[in-house]
Length: 640
Image 1: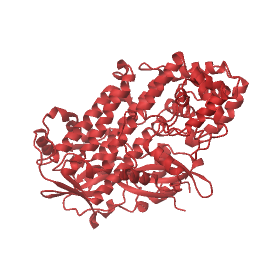
Image 2: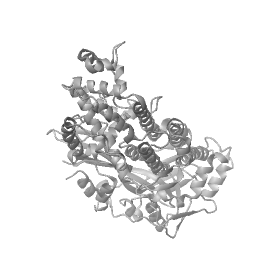
Image 3: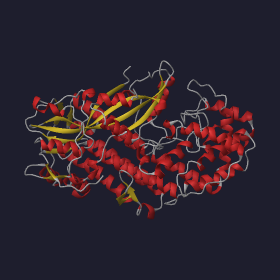
Image 4: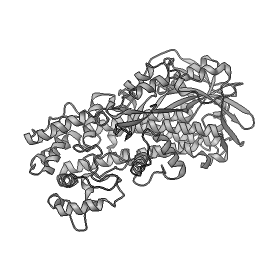
C-alpha cells in the first residue's frame, strides 16, 4: 500500500521573468532529485528602475495606491525543465535561474522562514548548552540532577520511591556533559530496575535518537537523550495514567505515589534549579502536556498535601478520580522534565480518541482543515511559549483573505494553495527546531534585482514573526544574566560558533522582520514609511541579500508528528518533511503585469514503521541525494 503524499510549497525568492506564461504544480513523484551543487556566493546589483529604485521610493515615504492581484501561472514549453528540478538550498535555485536569463528576483515570505529557521536553531542550541553548563545564572543540569538523585537514594523503601531513584539514576548514564561528575553509586535494587528500562528506552529510536540541531555536537546529542529519558516513565511511552477512553491504568496508583514523593524531594537549591529549568522550557517552547511533580497538587482536595499522598492510598484514589474531569493539562501524566504541548498534538490526540483519525491520513491537512474551520486557533495566550508565537505567524498564510493586506492585495485561488504549502513547510521547520524540545569562499555571481516590489506582500506574517522575537526577548532571555546574553555567541548550522551574540542576533531578527512588515505595507499602499530608520535592518538585508551565507544552507529536514496503528495493529509514525527548493512562477497584476520566477520549498509527508525510528538531517538528506526521483526517495523513506 502506498503510504505517502506530497505537496509543493512556493517559498522564498520571486525571480522576475519577462514574457513568461505561468506554472502549475509539478508531478511530485517524478520530480528530479539530481540537484545542482550550491553555486558561488550571489551578489546582488541594482539597475535603473529596479528594486533599489523601488526601495528608495518606499524609504522616501511614497506608497503605491493601486490594488494588486497575485496568481500562479503555468510554465511554457521552453521552461518545462524547471518543473521537476529540486535544489538543496535557495542559492542554488537562484543561480540556476540566473544561468537561464531569469535575472531579477524579489524575496518572498518563505525566504524569511528559511533565515529565521537558522536563527531559531542557533539561539535554542546555545541556550540548551547554557542550561547544561550552568551559564547565565542557571545551575548546571547535571549538578542539580545529581543532588536530586542523592536525595532519592536516601529512601527507596517502597516501589514508588524506588521508581524515582531508578529514573534519576539513568541521568548518570546519559550524561549531557562528559566532564560532569559520574553521580552517586546506585544500590543493586536500583540497578535491577534501571538496566532493563534504560535498554528499552535506548532500543526505541523514536524516544532516544537525537534529531534536528541536537546532532550538531556530542554534548547536544547527549542532552537530547538524557532529557527525553526524563520526559517518560518505565514502560509507559505515553506517560499517561488515564487512557483516551477514561480508564485508569493498573499502575496509576504507583505512578501517582512516585510523583508525589519526587515533589517532596524538590526542595532547596535542587528544587529551585528544577523550577527555573521548567519555566525556561514552558516559555521557549510551550506549556507542558502533562504535570511537573509539584503541579500534581492541582488534583488534591482542599486542605490536603502531596506529602500525605505519598502514603495515603485513599487520597491518591481521590486524585485519580479528579483527573478524569480536568482539562489542563490534556495528558494525565507527570514527568521530571515534562514535554511541551502544541495545537497539533492536542488536536490529533482528541481526534484519535474520538476515532476520527485514520491510519496514514495526512495529519498536516487535518490540522489545516481544523484551523480554517475555526476548530483550532494558533493565536497565543498568556501561557503560550515561543513555538506558539511562531505558529501564529504561519497561520497568517492560511487566512490571507481576512488580513489587513487583503484590502490592497487579492490572492488568487492557486496562489492561496501555494501559501498553504508554504504553511506546511514552515510548520515542519518550526516543529523540527523544537523536536526535543557552510562557508566556502568563492567568486560571486551577479544577480539583478527586478523592478517593482521589494518583498512579497504578506506584512501580517512578518509582523507576527517580529512579535515572536519580541516574546523571546521579554519572556525568555531575562531568565539569563545580561552579561551572558551580551557575550555568548549563537551557534550556526553544524554547531560552530557564530559572529553575533545572543542579544544581538535576537535584536537583528526582530528588527529584520518588523522592517519587512513595514516595507510590505508601504509597497501595497497600506501605510507609507515615515521613518527610514525603522526599516534600516530590512533594507540593508535586501540590498546585501547575496552575501547572506544562510541562503546556501541545506533546507531539508524531517520530523516525527503522530503515532498510530494500522489494521494489523502494527505501529507506524507519520513524519513531515521538506524535500528542497523548486522553481515556479507567479503573475502580479495591477496597473500592468509582471511575471516572476519563484524559488519554492517543497513539502512532503510519509509514514514509516515505528521501529525504524526517525532520520536525522544527514540520513534524511542522504536518502534524497541518493534517489533519482522524489517518488523513489519516498519509497526509501517509508522503509519499503
